[in-house]
Amino acid sequence: MSFEVPFVSGPPVDLQNKYINEVVSASDSFWKKSLTTRCEDWFFNHLGGEFYFLDSCTTALRACAILLNLRPGDEIIFPSFTHVSTVIPFVMQGAVPVFVDVDGIHFCIDANKVSAAITGHTRAVVAVNYGGWAPDYMNLRDLCDQHDLKLIEDNAHGMGAGHRGHRLGTFGDYAVFSFEKQKNITCHEGGLLLINTADSPGRVERLMNLGTNRLDFERKKTPHYEWVDLGLKASFTELQAAMLLPQLEALDQITAERRDAWQWYYDRLEPYAKSGLFKIPATLNEGDNAHVFYVLLQDQVVRDQLRAHLLRQSLEAQFHYFPLHKSTYGSKVGRFVGSDEHTMIAGMTMLRLPLFQGISLAQQERVAAAVIQFFTS
Image 1 (cartoon, rainbow, N blue to C red):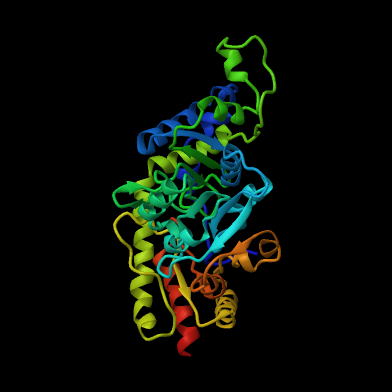
Image 2: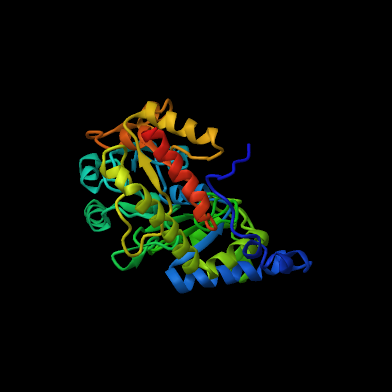
């Protein structure tokens, strides 16, 4: 189904296709991977660390789970308000998910709730930078250091965002990025693993090469090319790099345009939020990347009614995550620790409005006017 105002839209064609011809016109481009190398150079210059482009953010999380050497009964702490892809890779490696509440401002994991969830079986905390906002990383870092835990940063929403003067993606021992179609920059699918800790580089290399010692063999450090460890097959192609590179080069402009569009929604809807008809996010701070703009409604019934009202006008809006601790499988394999003050509110009353690079003021006005009409007519 097509919409006059879709929820998301890809980058402009001229930007998206800037480097495509370099790939399709050179028969050896897939082997040389020159555009992938340029993407790698961009990330090295902006974030440092050791990083690997992969086929998805989920695969990057799977790599984190493998590198943890999980054993049956090991526990990982997650916010319950996140996508299932944050959790599945760890469950597949045998971990027990332990869910906690999110904060009531930006719906990131509540660092104050994490402490009570830590047990002798806990191995890591996964923090999700929801909407490009950040949790209390100073508190989380202290907790993880105190209990010898890994801090994993799910930065799927955080490209171009910063927190306390540092770029998101640099707070965790491991950080993962997503370039899926709904993200601020996208090659339709793709991900990245960033390693900010002193893990064995040999183990990571083997993992990224199907568990083989291929690189050691090429360096003539071993006489045989063979299978030596667990591994992944998760190629990031030159076509993906060709789509991603021009957006990396234009990231500051993309972020600025999204912030302008986000601020327009905020200014247009704030008077109605102040009157109590709905709630909207707190105003942007320096470093925020404007990944999502939402309204919080009275309850799920009103949320669904408003969504249907927008759909009838060919305006696409989306709710977000159903709380994982209440889901059929999540409640079966995991547990929730502490009180749920905000997770169910976010999961059942949030409606995200269309926001993408190139959205016009006319499109935004149509959306905002329809929201206002729903409450005032």
